Length: 311
Image (tube, rainbow, N blue to C red):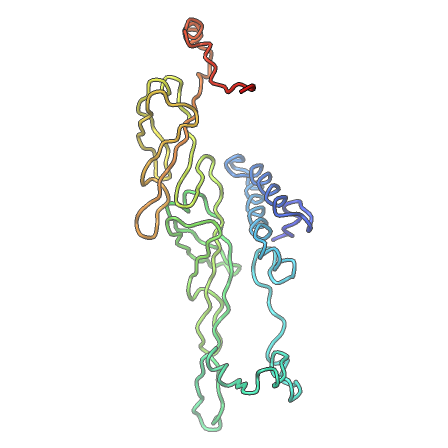
């Protein structure tokens, strides 16, 4: 059951957006499923943290939540005012609390309801003049958390409903965090043979251990050995669709960025963004006496690539 998002993130209702973002990042890192394998409690906390941040991380949603317009899951709260409440209003007041001299002199409820709901006449004897409205069903709002790679490559997921049924959701390749997917006809049933509403699925994308997304491009770091950095060579680099062979130029330094064209996020036109790989040079995990001996006798051992503080 959803709890108060402020309590979930451990922030006050007067917290700034920066404070909310910092709290979310700290908790998301602590409870991330990749860092807590097999821990169902951590996984559930991670989902709740994501749902809470989805509300409070969006200023508009946060304002609506504070006003009581949406609940802790982001779903619309039911409106408590109905058209029947205005049936006994005085003759000088139109439905909605506006008097006829406020621009509703030509108000025609029959026309408006016909446009919104659709209308069909009942043709049986004794029902002459009676109108039956076909009311469209309400939309249902859901939130679905998916893995980073499922958002990039596409996937088939399902949402379990309270009645025991489920909704199958096709995740298109390249889906973005907070993107809304509409499943037509999967909402509340209509009234009087009216059409059903839609299911609105808001996607939450979990962060990945080493991939990140910027627009349609993918970014990642790649560890290489000292020998690969100096001599260059072929290395295996991870991409969202699997490993590829990448050429490391000679004398590559930490911070060198290499581009893998077409290995980024799929686009609607069938093309893909690029992947940018930042190299990180790593020394051997265990001490290497030969390497130490070489460095000790190397003419460039005293070279200082650091900028002088006096310059």
